[in-house]
Image (cartoon, rainbow over all chains, first blue to last red; front, side, top):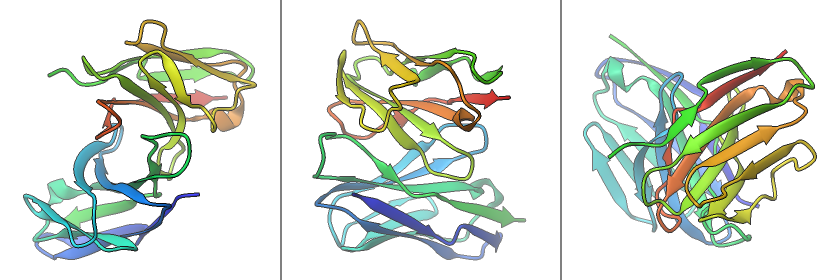
Length: 113
Length: 112
């Protein structure tokens, strides 16, 4: 069974204070690791997909990296508008569902001005 | 491009009542998913459709939950009868060929 664990559960930063969120996973053959952002009262918003160890993707102040066991979401010089819950999910080769995502519990990021 | 539409946005019912949620996916997306998100947790897949066929419903509590996608476009998820532990956000997502999933705003259900 695929498993995803995110840490920390909550992170408070000052504006401009860079940090990283962690996503550890176990999966029977990785077919993709996904990062989503979720604002209160809204559905998850797609950020990145990573497919193989060593891959990196960037979008504005966010950069996602992937190893064989974990992924990091690096936030550089965050702004208050980056405050949200960040969700990590994996899609594996096993099982009958070819599109099934297994999500972590999320990291709640708060950026203070 | 219009996103995934869901209705209603909020629903409050009493336990043992029934409730239904509706989802209209992004145009052209063959795959549709229903997820349950309990407060403080990540979404959990309930059922996945490919066109109008079920691909995975292994985590759907079939004694009380049902879902259909009759014409391969929009879908309904029903709970009958509802229990207190069904209080959650029900998210619909869609994708092309099981690639990136795009989520709707969700329906927030409170069972009293």
